[in-house]
Length: 485
Image (tube, rainbow, N blue to C red; front, side, top):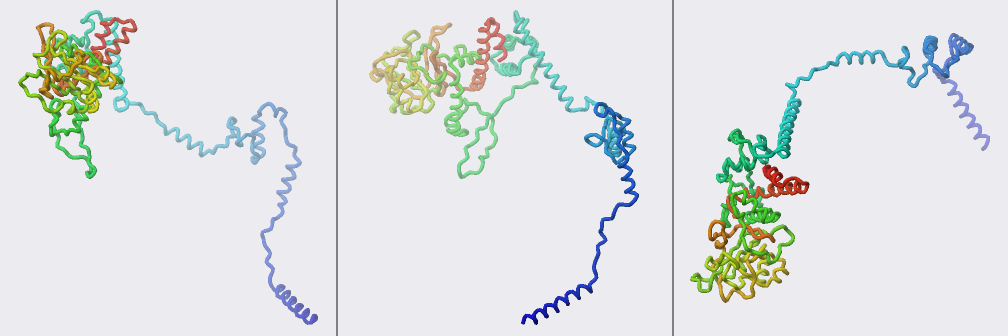
């Protein structure tokens, strides 16, 4: 068995060897050749030549040595970080084509002369400089007026502040204000109004109150344009403005007036020709105003009369109908009033603590009683502001009755040029009160102008106060700052 197997293996091996020997052998031609004889001789010569060394190589740079070295063998890279020394001619590594392109680019650069007449930016800058120059002139004139003015002629101005110009334009439209008064009040040059002419008009701003969008509506309602309406033309039943919109406007005015005192409002009314400044005299603040400068609300009037008065008594209780943000104002007819203290002939109290409790619950802002009140501690504990002529102890029922709600109230007061004067408080008038007293502001066509003047006058008087604290004369400072309003 073993001999036969070995014979077969031998035959296979012989067959494979014979087949391989018949095939041709492929030899590659990619064989590294030895260097040529010429290259070998050149290398040997370079090895035999000693390298030339500079004696001062550690101290100085020798340009001649560098030139000689470059000429001897261009393949040797010169010393230097980038392979060349740009400070030495002949060693720069920049390409000549690159240098040529840079030169051509430089020749294409041209300078252009600026033409201010055609440059829009230059014209705008010139206009700004011109305006700045005019502003500086005006400031210097105002400063000179403040420092050197002795009389009205020396303080006459031909330039005024834009806000002062707006005030002048408003006064020009007011029939009650004469041109001579304007020139005197604002310290103007006699020819100022003539030069002003009618070219400049006071802009008006129209505020459009949009309707609230209901959940099932898309976008706002489209309404035709309407003329601007003054607040005095708006009544509770006015179909143009809904109650909700009117209440928003009323709250906004009350919020504005609450930031100022009755004295501030009187200053504005004086400016608008109301000599008494809307002041209702002889009233005392029995329960103080807290948390804000003044209490403000719309007058909700109540008229009491004697029990034997022919007018019938009002059946419903007035206190249960007080609207929100109202100022309850209670008065008596003229025949029950006197010019001198105690100003009324009814000694019973017209108002008490229970009435303040109910009024406060109805969100009223205060009460003015043109007569006596009682229960002082109750008003003060409620922190509900109340004004009155005096105090008493008895309730009103035995002597008087309510004969009118939301009717005009007439108030008898002393006068400087006649025995007595009659003031009228209408339903809806704004009532402003603090510890100084009560001021009535009519809700009429001049309301916007009155409101506009108040903050400007307050700002001017604040500056006057600062000047006085710094030692400046009061009259001079008042004349200067109030002329800017």
